[in-house]
Image (cartoon, rainbow, N blue to C red; front, side, top):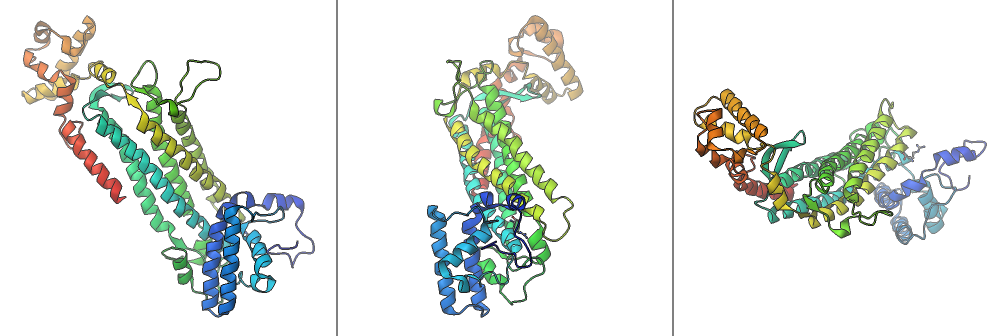
Length: 461
Ligand code: ARG
């Protein structure tokens, strides 16, 4: 078993079936450059503790730089016989700096503390990319809201017409969860920026290496407080997978609406050709595949989270090989978001709204009935009675096949003496929307203020 990280106590080498099962290079090679960074830091700690001379340390860093170049340009790849990224890189280092020096680097560290550190570094880096991608989605939502400050649409509950709202209010309602996701990533990163390096296999090191130095070199805040916890907990990975799933879910809710809005029946939006797909058989088709994939990928992100949680459940301390199963799901979550979010942002930025159609539909379905009731309340009618009167008026409209704004003075008076013709002041969608001036309401003035607040929150996230 030439070049393996273990073997002396074994009479035979690993069976081919074991090697096949055990091998992780096809996914943990994504950590190769983080492994090299860890090795640079570890070499410094070894030198600081007197285990490498200045010359040896220099040769070690140069050797590691050579490996990094090989990883970067693809000339250094794991071989069939490599079990994992750590073994492959030790082999490669020995090939560059010789077995004497190359064999010194592993002192005082284990693949267990290495992998626990590297996965954090990987996720911290990608969390920044994902945050930038979320920002693009939020920017696209804010830009569309800004471009349509007065457009009114039917607001829905239970997917039924409920009350008219500003399109900008609705778009911003999809931005806020994403802002909270940005804040979640920020909060998570404070917990993630901890270095298990130096914990060894589980119990810590005897060599007097400085874990603070390693943490600092790796851009992490501090070493893990407990070597058992540092090497064997993956709550940081699971939490990341949760945030990734939540981002996917938040995006999927808007995706679902875009799919509906893009139907002939709704007709609220037209998607740009560059962000739509065609059919292989139906020449006329133009499909919202980005929105559908975003919706579908949310399921995949949830699966990655639940799979990981199932792996972690009831694992005894400390490291167990099961923990190797953390990487594929969370790497997949990273890649999924890094492909979904840019496409989603582009689709939103280029979407065209049929604001006339939205406005025309806004008053339908008696969506101003609450405004009638609240108009009555302002005239001293108890809400319970006002609700009855407005509901009665809706029934009269329905029986006559008309909308609320089409009622005659006689019909109003027939329902209740309280319903004077002045009630018409609230029977316009613009009037209704403008009057919802309470905090967080859909009045244009509030929605404009809200947008300022939204942009501020994004900038501080
Ligand atoms: N590949 C392992 C992982 O991803 C790290 C190596 C630890 N292997 C071991 N036999 N202790 O978790």
